Image 1 (cartoon, rainbow, N blue to C red):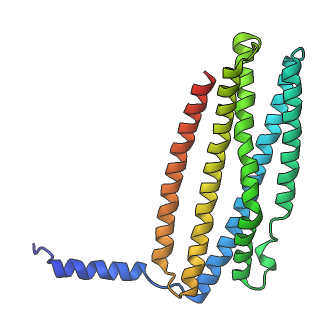
Image 2 (image 1 turned 180 degrees about the horizontal axis):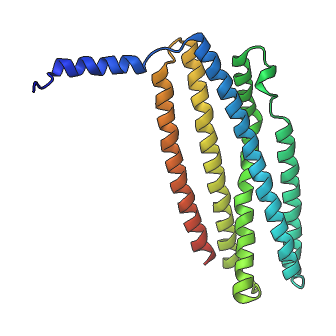
Image 3 (image 1 turned 90 degrees about the horizontal axis):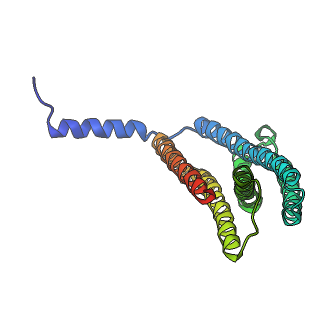
Length: 239
């Protein structure tokens, strides 16, 4: 059997690359922009809905803590303040949800729709990611208090070291949540901005979309590792 020579392999590789690097037609670009406009809108909405659910559940759990620690005035005052923070956060996220640009079908030019959503992200939505990161810190606080109650039946008086450790762990939970949320969304938006630039330069191709898909898979893997690491760190700090 004859072994393919180097020239044949190079030729086959170039053909395959050329196939992947086919430029998108105007029709394909329009479909792509419409799909991405719809996807980014759903991403905004899902993120806000998930955070509203988390904050609602956390608020309910804090009401349980208030009932369990009725005789502890420090816990009672602290939890009422946190509940007020949760109510404000819910109001902020609901307001943000209502301000998400309208559905793509109402836009006469699909590209304008996508650009409007990218602008909305940079000017408005990114603020909600910081508010969303509060959920991580609040879940840590709520989980820690329940852990102490079921293990010790009470929370002993805290000294300065306790406050520093507990406050530091809460801050870490917030920073971790903010970094993950913002990192993921920035990645998505930057991919869209890159596609718009390539469309302007008339260089967007099948290869571009394929590379972006591979990058999203790698990001998902990294996010899963980060989530597992965060949960392990949370369990360690509580214990």
